[in-house]
Image 1 (cartoon, helix red, strand yellow):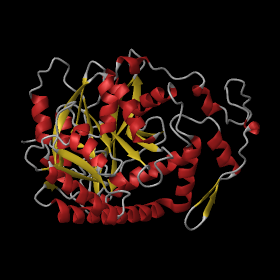
Image 2: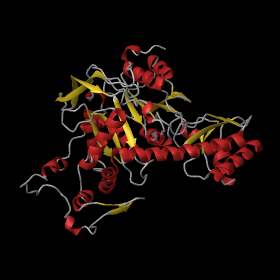
Image 3: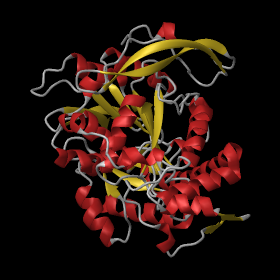
Image 4: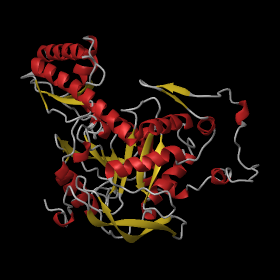
Length: 473
C-alpha cells in the first residue's frame, strides 16, 4: 500500500534540521467556535525518532464537534477565576468556600530518600477550587515534559497551536474526547482487540465500533486504509481513530516505527483525528526510539493521552491530554460541566515531585520502572515456555504489563468458560479475549495474562495451572 507523500516527509535522525512549526490562531465562526488558520515559523529541533513537521492545510475543528459539544458554553463562574488573584480585586462573584474552615493545615509525603512538604501556598491551591485546565505549577512541568519526550512545543499563550489539560487519568480524557467528537449515531475506529475500558464506555454510548486489525506490530494501517476507502456503511464514515500504540492493553504489542509513519499518513489521507492513548509509553525501555504520533503530527490532528497511573500512582488519578488548542479548550468545557477539574491535591503532589526530581529525576524513575517490568515479563515468558509449549502461542511484548496468549487446543475457540469458570475454580485469574473484541460477544481463543504484580513463583504456578486446564479440555 502506498501512503501519500510518505517518503518525502521523513526527517533524518541524529541532527538538528530546520523545519516549520505550524502555529494557529483561533478565529470565531458563525457559531462562535474555534477554527484554525496556520502561520508558519522556522525553528531547529534536535533529532529524535521520526520527527516531521510541515505546513498543513487548515483544519476546521468546529465542524467535527458533536451536537452536545457545540452547545457547551464557558461557565460564567469559572470565567471569573483568572481575575480573582489580581491585586486589589474584591471577589463577591465566585462561590469558593472559606479556606479558613478547612481542617487541613499542611501536607507531607514521604519518598524513599526524603520528605516532600507542600508550602502553605501549595496547600491552599491544592485544597481550593482551581482552574479547569490544571494547576499552573503542574502545567508548566507538563509542557517541559512534552517538549523533552516528543519535541512538541505546547505554549501557554492564547495563540498556541497546542494546549495541555490535566485529566483524571487517560480514561477520563478519552471519554471527554469521544463526547466532543463522536455522535452516538456515528462511528469510531478502534484497535481490535481493544482495551476493555474503552469498549465499556463506547457500547452504551451507541456509536458503531469499527475494529481495525492488529498483530504483534500493532494496528495495521493497510486494514485501516482498506476499510475507510471502501466505506459503505449506513452510518457516516468515521472521523476518529482510537489507538493504544505502545505496549497496548490487551495484546502488549508496540506499534512499529514504520507503522507509526504509515498510520499517520492514512489518517491524514482520510482526514481522521487520532486519539493516541499511551499510558504504557513511560514503561518502554527505549522510548527515544519510538516516535509518538503526536511527534509526527504535521497537521495538528492528534490528541495524545498520557497518564502517571502506571509510574507514580494509579490512585492519584492524574493524566493529561495534549492536542490542538481548539479541541483541548472544548474538552475543558466538558470538564467544567461534569467534575470541574482534576483533584487539586493530586495535582499538587505530582507538581511537588517534579519540583524535587526535575525531568532528569523523572527519567531515572522511568528507567527503574522499565527494568522492573522487563524482569517481570521475562519471568512470565520463562514460565509460559516451561508449561504452555505446544498448548498455546504468544509473542513476547517489548514492554508494558500484558502477555496475549492464544490457546491452540482443538475444540477451544472461545476461552470464556475456561477462564471465567474453570480457571477461577483452579485459583488463577486471567481475562478472556472476548472481553477485548471490538465486536460484542465475538468468540476469542485468546486470553490476557498480566505480569505486573505476581511474583515469579506465582506466575510459574499460574502457567502450570493453565496448562493443566487446557489439557483437560
